[in-house]
Length: 152
Image (cartoon, rainbow, N blue to C red; front, side, top):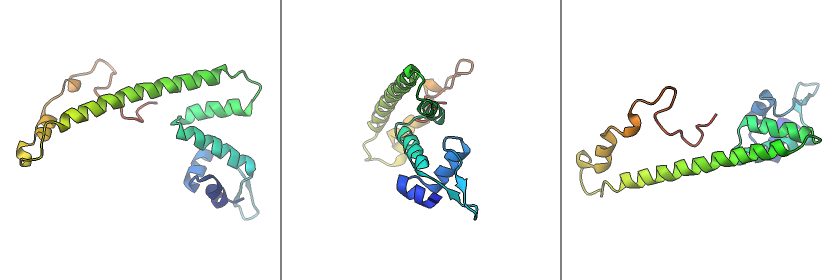
């Protein structure tokens, strides 16, 4: 099958398929005499595996590790458990960060009732104030909480 058909069958955009090939997650397909990529069912299965991992917000490195275990089924799976445990811990930390962010936004929202002009807006006044988080960070430490995709 050509790349367009693979994209349709898996719900994965063509550019993402090419990206996964460049990253070495998806093996290079055979080529037709006209130099078209020709994919087989194993490509679709692997792409579905990768996409499932991405829906779980796994990094490419985590996916690469899981694919290695998938491709070499005689390996003990304790490392797979460890990878998932680590990922779960990351998700838990992110949930805590997001809950703190929600609370900070709710507090900020409570500063304005919307019944005045913006020169007296409590939200804008609060945002203009320096925050404790903006104090110099210790060596190498960021002065803000990373966003949801801030991990390496």
